[in-house]
Amino acid sequence: MTVRTATTEDLPDVGELLAAAFHTDPVSVWLFPDDDRRRAVQPPFFRTFALLALESGGSISLREDGLAATVWFPSSDDDEDVMSLFDMLTDEEAKKFEHLSELMAEHHPDRGEHRHLQFIAVHPDHQRHGIGGDLLAHDLSALGDMPAYLEASSRLSIPLYQRHGFEHIGTPFDPDPDARMYPMWRAG
Image 1 (cartoon, rainbow, N blue to C red):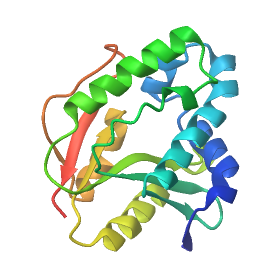
Image 2 (image 1 turned 90 degrees about the vertical axis):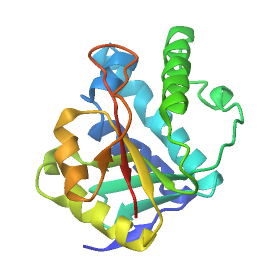
Image 3 (image 1 turned 30 degrees about the vertical axis):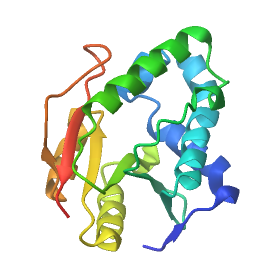
Image 4 (image 1 turned 180 degrees about the vertical axis):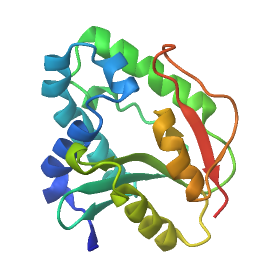
């Protein structure tokens, strides 16, 4: 497996990969209930997230074959208002996204410097074959002793994270009962 650090030139591909990987994710379905709308809006939505990761000092790991990517943010407490960057959202979607962002901020642990795994994406045709786990192991090795945090957005992904040393912390939270998120921490 060859992995490289993505640059701004990779953002369109990263946005498309994340959109494909998260198309049926419970949180994505809650945020964008209409299938056609979700298919149209998620690539620019995720591309914006990827750009924010790079601009904030985070990183994106991308498999050279384009089948998987991770999007990491630093643990900074930057309260900069970024909602204006998500101008692809309707007013209703923006309200839902803002609510979700507030919930995530409220549940984000205050445990010192760490990295936040915002997204791990594997192309849907290649999921459940160990690709995501291999990429996560690569990234965690590169982090060394740096702690890491994530919110699992699907119960199906929890065992993967547990195999890589993440443990449940706090209480699961949800913007909607069908879109529960599970905060998890890895001590490093």
